[in-house]
Amino acid sequence: MNAAVTETLTGLDRALASGLLPSKASDLARSLRARLAAPIRVTVMGLPDTGKSRVIDLLAGDSIVPEGVRLPALRLKYGEFAMTRITRPDGSTEEQAGLDGAWAAGRRAVMVDMEAPLPALKRITLMEIGIGLGRIEQARACAWAAKQSELIIWCTRDFGAPEQAAWATMPDAIRDQAILLRPKIDLSPNPAAALDRAHRLAQDDFERVLAIDTPRALAARQGAEVDRAEFKASGGQSLIAAVLKVMDRTRQGYLDRADLLLARHPEAIEAVAPIARATPVVLVARVAPATPAPAPAAARSSSDAVAKLLNSVVSQGGDAAKAPAPALSEASLDLLRDAVTRLRSVGTELSQTEGKFRRTAMLDRSVEEIVELEERIADAQEDDPALSRAHEDVQAALDLIQLIQIENAPQAADDAVVLMLQLRRRFDRWLDRTPVAA
Image 1 (tube, rainbow, N blue to C red):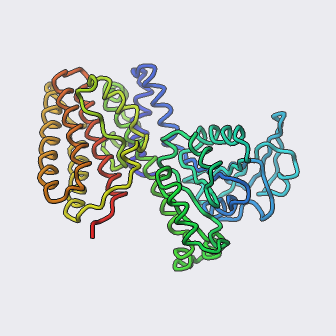
Image 2 (cartoon, helix red, strand yellow; image 1 turned 135 degrees about the vertical axis):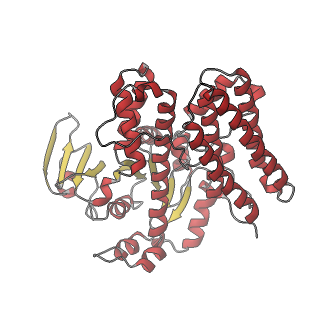
């Protein structure tokens, strides 16, 4: 667990111990603490015979379920000793030592839980769900998976109409950072055409569309040494990198929400003596992908707008975020990178502001920074029209932060920090998606 997570967990523990958090804030603090302390939940799902089990093996770093063994649903997490447990339709359970998928498959189970002392499982828990062809069955499977997952990898052969209909039922927060995977690309007569078709069908509904020769990737990781050239050529490296990126983004989202909650309730942190050997809580704005930019302030009150921003801190996307990003010049990309760095630095500085005139100082500084950023992007847009979307985002943020300043509500200073966080997230996501102009 890294220092940033440890600091935030310490702050949440102190705030909860104080008893000063309002009921809803206390519930949120407990929820965020649980998620920060737990591995990221990754689900591999799709129609039968789409290579899900071998993808589980690849992510876990070991063989979990033997070839040819079909399980109803599998949950895999870290444990000091290998264990397999089944749950029957009547709710009764049975378990035995070791990873024994063949034993579990013959026990009329509705769920199979396994534990294993694998290093990867300290960072992620894995679940495998197979879905049938019926619409009702697919909808139920998707609804259940959405509640259990932070990242879904959808395994497919052609992502046809039934799969598209099932995937459309997923919440946007899941869809916008999911991965569509073509695991059996080695069996396709024309791998390039198969991947191109998957891209055309699904690029707006998934964070990434990838293909992998799973047997080749698994072979490259056998033994103590990894054949890096083979692993990269198989598509395994791209999949692992995409999974790690979403994991980091998800954890950063939880950290940001927790830091914002603590910023709103400093009295709860200060009321409790520091926990032994804990470092002071530093409310640091961390780099994470952008959520949708706020709409112009004229359309609504600042309280409604900020509430929507606060509720969407972890969500990713929106129609504009899904649309293909236009190619930007290297100078424009440098400008956005500088904006991300600047917004992060200012957000960190503002979150630590104290004193009698804290609210006024934070609001004035926030307006000043966004005005300057709007002017810089407006000037750069004259040379690179592809910056128009970024300029619209900054203009919308400027409208809203000026309205926040005018209303000057008690929470206005913290709302200003939230808004800068959202803008930084937006630009960071742009940098992830935007190609460099030729």
